[in-house]
Structures are given as structure tokens and as C-alpha cells.
Length: 416
Ligand code: AVJ
Ligand code: FE
Image (cartoon, rainbow, N blue to C red; front, side, top):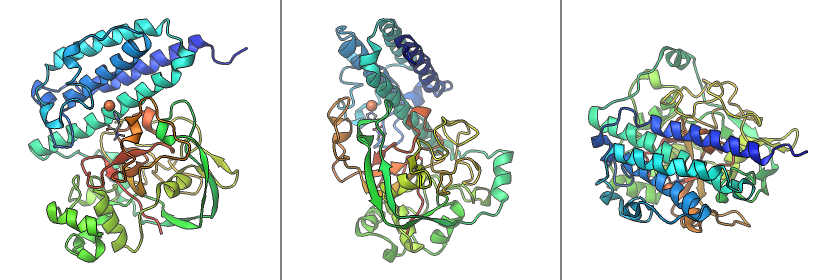
């Protein structure tokens, strides 16, 4: 007897599609048409565009490519295509209500098709779609935060329990990750093309911070005039700083209540400068993944730092449960076999690695999904943030951004 029948796979997919969509629509509850169309930053599209693009992508892959239906809503072909209009021209959008109806119409057809779809052959595509929606969902979350910040200097109010754990004394420590091979990447169904195939990687001994760098730690760098001192910055980093004269992380809050929170909203250059200041360096993505996933005793790899059980709101800060960062020592169970905390959730972490393919890479579901970014212009980020949805939270997940990006929910930890 097969353990999973095609029928139960269908049901599982249906449940997950519904869950993921609820999480997406939830973000739009109090959104006016104004905010819907507003561009918070030149590098990011309005949240309304992301919503339309989610529907467009689902329609293209499921209704056109799988079900063989002819294209509908041709008025959106250019508007909601990722390669369609320049970002600056994506503000002239249909109303929120129109886009909601569009998504609903697509989704009804998709669910009708799901009842008869050859799931066994298409499973990877359906999971890719969940990933895709999740990632745009996270972008919507931080674009909303950017807009709120710009409008009223909004920053999150900490609740009581966050304040309490902030008050515990917390000092950064490092753990030694012993030399040896580990298994990098993942071949499981829900993973992206760029995480595959798994391969063995040998690393020498190295040390890694047990926590992401906190605001308390980073303040030292600011107070030592780190933003003014050329010596800490790489050539590109200093050039970036000269053109973008900033003096604190984008999501910085000047209050001791935030001391134990991870730094959030730094470019790769700022992370690199801090590491130089403190006499350390940024980890490579292999160093990050080994520390998060490898059990040296059993020579086994885990999907999550705590093992193979799925994440919950009790274990780590993700999925918008909290809605902002939490002190890096809040989740005791969010600890890897090597003893590193908070590797998944809270903030993404910059790594020193360029986003490049693993040996044996095969693009999926289209050539440019990852391949267009294997250009030595994008750094790898690991670990997920407080807004990362379950479909994108795992040890092997690779995110990528230009090193100057600081609008995302990103911090870092150091190695040496
Ligand atoms: C991997 C998050 C940078 O949002 O641009 C979404 C993912 N690719 N649609 C992005 C993606 C195509 C990508 N990031
Ligand atoms: Fe997309």
C-alpha cells in the first residue's frame, strides 16, 4: 500500500493553497487604494502590483501551461509580468477590489482544475507556486513597513514579554564548528532549483557567532564613528556610503528596549564594515548552512536547526506571528546542534557568498528564475525573517539581493 495516495496529496495541496492565500489577503485588510498603488522605494513595486503578479503567475503556470486554457485577462499580460514594465511604471493599477476579483476568478478555475490534475507529475510546480506567493508575500510585508515608516515615523511597539527578555544580560559568544564534510543543499520536493542538488562540502575549523549581531553591539560601531572611518569599509562599500550617506541601519530604533534585538535593515557593506570593526568577517553561505543544519555526532543533516519538525510560533519568529524582530535569545529551542541560536526567522542574514549555482544545477520552472541572478552582483542571504512564510523557511533556502539593498528584513552574524 502506498503511504500517500494521489488523493491525499491533492487534499494537502488544497489546504496549503488556501492557507497561503489567506496569509496573502490578510496583509491587505486595512489597505486603501492609495497605499495599494504607492511605490515605497525605486527598487520595489507597489504592494498592489505584487498581488496582481501572484494571480498572474498562478494563471500562467496552472491555467495556461498545465490545464491548457487560453490566456484570459490579456490586459494584465504586460502589467503583471515580472519582465513587463519598469518598476516606476507599476503605480497605475486597477483598484484593490478589481485585483481581488481577478485573483478570486483565477483561483476558482485553479481549484476546479486541481480536482482532475495529474498531481504526481505536477507536484513540484504546485510547491513552486506556494514558494512564489510566499516570497511576494514577504515583500508586501516589508514594503508596508517601509510605507508606514515614511508616513508617520512608525516603529513597532514592543509588548511586555519582549521587553522582559530584552532586559536579560546578553553577550555575544562564538562556537567552534569543527572541520569536516557536511551535506549542503536539499533535493526535497518543496525546494527551489538553486538549492539543488545536495553535495558534500568540506570546511576547515571556523568560529561563528551564536546570535545575530544585536543593536547593542552595533551601537558600539556607530559610537566609534564606524560610519565615518574609511578603514572599516571595502572599496565598494565606501563608495556606496559616499553616494548614500547613512549613519544607522534603516530600521534602527534608538532605545535601550531594542538592545537585544538583531540589527535590521543594513546593506551588505554595513555588515561587512561592522565585521571588520570587530575583528571578524561575514560567514560564507556554506559556513552558515553547516552551523545551522549539521549534526556532527550523527553526521546527519536537518531541515531546521532544531531537527526535522516543522516550525511553530513557539520555536521561532517567522510567519508574521509577532510582526517585528524579537530579542535574539527569545527562542531557546531555535538552536542548532552546534549551538547557534536564531538562525531561522527574526532577520535574514547576509553571507559573504555571491549567489551562484551548485554543481549539477538545473533551472526550474523557467530558465531565468535563478539563473538570471548568477551574475556576481547578488549576495546570498540565509535564514528567513519575522515575515517569512513557512514555505520559505528552512536551512537550505537561499535568498539573494544586491549588496546595497537595506529595505529587506536583514541583519547578519559574524564568523572568524
Ligand atoms: C528571491 C525574493 C529575491 O522576490 O524577486 C519572486 C523571488 N522570483 N518571483 C524576488 C522571486 C520571482 C525573488 N527573491
Ligand atoms: Fe514573481
